[in-house]
Image (cartoon, rainbow, N blue to C red; front, side, top):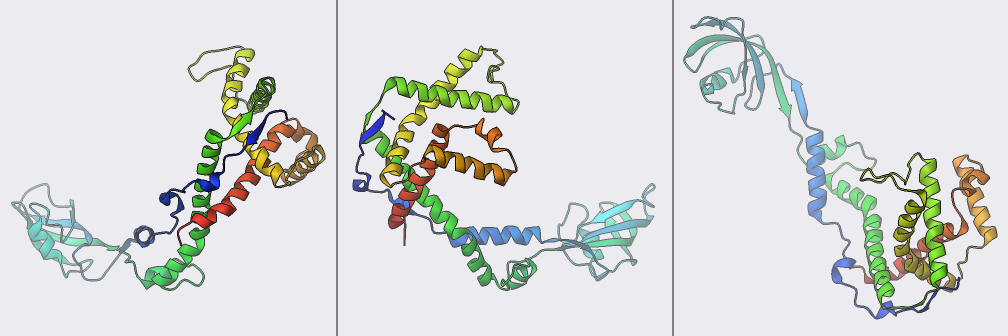
Length: 305
């Protein structure tokens, strides 16, 4: 390409903001996860044991001091002290399924028979929960902490490294010198717009129909898409600079091999996949990946210990 970055700003001179280097997972996050798991593993089960506070008890009215109560279902929640039902909640404690007892609800005297009692099983955050999770080699809460770190530490480190790399790239974009060939830039943007247009059309989305309900010409749709592509041009020059400096160059031959490899993995024909991309767009993706790989490796030095 004629366009290129001719003077790369020395990003290593920048002071990396301390917050970008933070990646450690706080205990509070794991505690919250365990509490959520405990809630997920809590549940209800029918019990025939003596009624306790916190149970939900379904009763049938056998006798009442007022008409229209006999045969009605009465739900009691011992321990909640619902207005008017406090006495009944106390009276049902210690009883079992099938037993009858006398009580009052508001101004009505009742004889109730217990039809069903449901007990809420609240799982606590303890070793029993850790075992219940069924995770290999996790039988204690301490084991779960180790498991959580094994699962997430690398991801958090990578995320922090990406953040630092992105910070460097933004500063490089602002502070570096570029030699831009405007005709080449316009061609690059239009090419990206054309690829996007054709790809979306093949997927059933017509860019001539705007989100506002307006219908525009194909030429206008491509012009708007090209304007959107313009913001990716400088980053592409940066990715090209870092990749080529590192000896990573995607040739036409390499491009064809990559497309054939992807087509084989997807079970598609290489020639069909070739119609959906070109070497410029493919380079953009590959060079971006390579640049981030390089910068992320450097960014590790700035992570909190």
